Length: 487
Image 1 (spheres, rainbow, N blue to C red):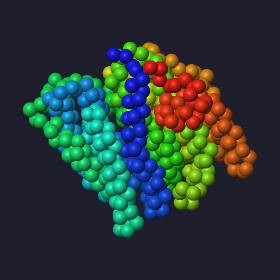
Image 2 (spheres, helix red, strand yellow):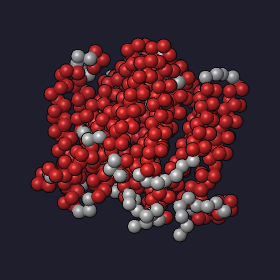
Image 3 (cartoon, one colour):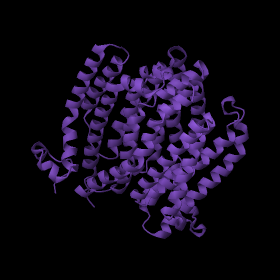
Image 4 (tube, helix red, strand yellow):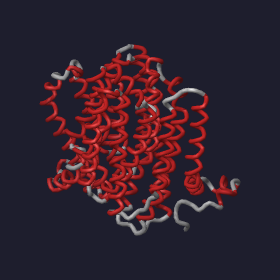
């Protein structure tokens, strides 16, 4: 089987569908920031963020990241019986893990910041685990439209629950967590019945051999996921320890602007992981990876530069004045987020090739670098130190993966393109530390350069995805070489 133009079309079609389903819920995270910053003080926002991040750490530990196996093995399953084996086995792992988790939860009350939150934290992990498994397995069934509908319904539930719990009932931190829990639960229940997942539950199809294969695949992913989480959230705990919960609340908001990048990238990444697995072993996949990676880079550079351009006015409009200091830190985190997304893309090579141990070793390096730099920099430089440590960790691991993954799949990349764009965005991040009209002139000039450097790639994708009638009205697109190979 060879990679064809249809492979590209399927990738972009799935990306669009995932965008429709995910955009609402992901955009919701951004839309609700003004509500959160108005309803919660920096101290409260910092505290509840630590509770949510603790749940994110516990999730892969007690589910063994089995949702990743649901996608990888589910896409390979070609009969109902095999799919029943995959889903039933994964569901059994989740239930067993969460049952074990109940035994250790009383110990969590020893942590001061979790006092009074242990029960709701346990429920949070349960609902998040079920949502993660069901959503991932539905993707393995290639029911992407249903996945998208589930995302839309979850978004509506999240909006209504936040308005009810935070604005009407004024439940504060508990309301914040309950809104997430109930929206996750609604998503799980909807997908379980709408996608007919109940038909895939068959205790007789539980397989120890399948369990061994899945756990062998997932084993490196558990510490990998935890290490990435440590890299991304350890600074929040260390900031709280050295500078207090209010400072962590500002740090949490500083992460929200870069979330725009991860929001858009996640829509593509969900579709790309499916394509990477399905095209594994296909003739021409090297060219497939090269073209998709090149476009992905250009799009991310331009989007990140655009965010750096509007960072200050966006922060003034978007959040409560008590959080305006976040505008100084979000540019550095924006750079870090770009390389986070690139690392996820390159990590898909390890997933497709079932080389998850390499994913673990690179994630371990990121975690070690991040923690060392956090303890070295945060006590003296506060959030600046945390943001710098995060960027250094992701940037270092990116270059390791950049030169390691082509050994598995011989795709190509342009190192000058990466370095030049990185330097330009770094200059924009530095400019954001100052104020004055000249800052916006400089930012606009640098954005124009980034756009010019990457414009040809954006034209290629436009020539590929736009309808023929539109392209006929834009003659210059007809002269642009399409992104995929010509039929």
